[in-house]
Image (cartoon, rainbow, N blue to C red; front, side, top):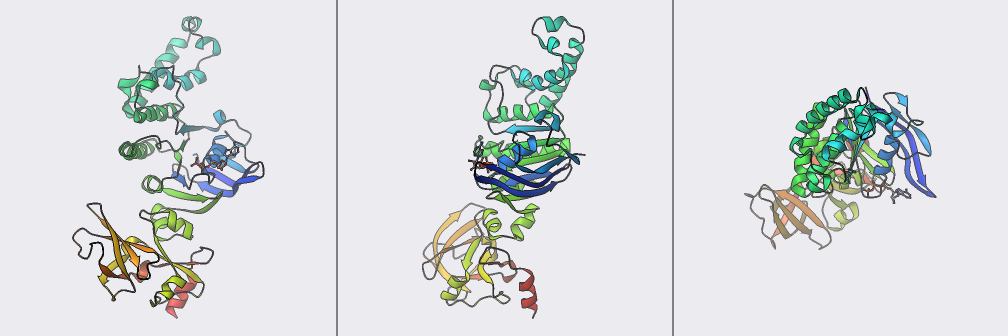
Length: 373
Ligand SMILES: Nc1ncnc2c1ncn2[C@@H]1O[C@H](COP(=O)(O)OP(=O)(O)OP(=O)(O)O)[C@@H](O)[C@H]1O
């Protein structure tokens, strides 16, 4: 069992608070991703779990035991970094073998010449070779074991970095933006490989990224972080459909959710949909919640400013009638009215309309009561 519990973690550098009272329970075997903009504190939080950084206050528990006084090595966690952190002068085999040799051989047995002659070393080396070959075949790097990191592609290097974590059989994998040095195509391929690896190993993965698509496609749950705080921790589909906070709604989903302020809506002369709470300051809706109708027939109206054809989908950027603000509409290639310059009406599915107050907090309970009244 290796659930992780963070209790009220605080971390500052000098006067600047970086992590502000974060509490989070990560389940045993779960794939949890910390996602947030650059500088929000997600790497710092991961490094605190790893023991590479000490929090100012709060507790980290792994498998129910407080690990605050344990060094990184003693925490049963393995970290995979964006920079791979491989030893350039060692072969792939030796990079993978290093953590195992350090753990299983005595100092004398590790000595280059003398060590080889010492009893026990041969058996340990044989076991290490078998384990490395197994991990290498799982990661499809068996043919690269003699090469040095400098002779590998980025994707291959990242597989070696994963292998080095794997051979330690940790209870928890901590990954800090492991794919961000790879090109777009390789990133998508490696995403699938990491998901498969998680499924095969069945251990807890904590993954850090600023890429919401990566977070959404890989994780059991996603923790959205901003300015050192957790805004929402939920399953990807819940974050998308049911965000608690306008900042979560805006971070998750591509293209971004449409947000029209109440004041703007009213100034356009458009009637507000039923059930709008008096505190609602922002109305938000996803691009797929908008239908194109004849100009004048929609709740909002505008002009198609540009068309992005992705083959499977078409995104229309519609400038609202007063020329202020744009609504993005997701439509299908066979739908008509998709050329730039055309005046259109926008019909918005009321069931998909999300309401937020002036502080960006979701208006939910009251909305339902009012709608029913
Ligand atoms: N050792 C340090 N000393 C001072 N400030 C630091 C230190 N490490 C991180 N910071 C600051 O803390 C903030 C959070 O850093 P962190 O690396 O956790 O962010 P992040 O969300 O992972 O961002 P990124 O995606 O850019 O890596 C940043 O403003 C960073 O400059």
